[in-house]
Image (tube, rainbow, N blue to C red):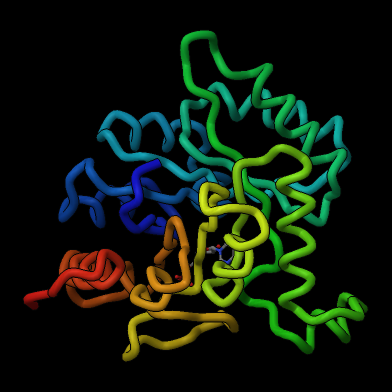
Length: 239
Ligand SMILES: O=c1ccn([C@@H]2O[C@H](COP(=O)(O)O)[C@@H](O)[C@H]2O)c(=O)[nH]1
């Protein structure tokens, strides 16, 4: 997947997606999440591929190994670039996911990259301690899941910018660190707890940033994208 920001297409219809995308060329990355995929099904992936976008299909699979393997076998056929599971599903589940992808990828096509969600960026220290009953810190929990995900053979993780540097130290620079929770200083936090700016993401070693509402909710989404992309790349933005 290209290193440009991944725009989260959190819309409830194909019509809204393509209205939004009129301002963009095919050189951007897009993310299809549960809402859009459950509404529009595989057809939305085919349409986005026709427009030339790189696609992260963010369905966060989490089930018994056999079910995840079968589901991944189906998803592998869609031609997306990146898929994911919850690392909390365990090492055997993640290995099964990888096996399903390998089996389902048509010959001659590249297997989609696969990453594990460590701790959602909407999760904070209190939730880890009181709701998940995890005794270690949030950062240790994220790092533990990152190591487990690497041991299972996956290509990287979803984490927040706050954990990207330590994951690079332990799992290597090549291991993907896909970081949502990206906000401009003036944007609202919404339901996210572990947020960061695009500049901080670059500095901390994220390999990819995921941006939804800071772009889709902006009065000029293209300008918001350009500003975020410039900050992410560390180049001057002339707005
Ligand atoms: O830990 C995670 C995993 C996935 N997401 C997804 O990223 C986008 C973020 O949207 P914003 O509007 O920029 O908050 C959204 O689609 C989530 O499902 C995440 O935020 N955190």
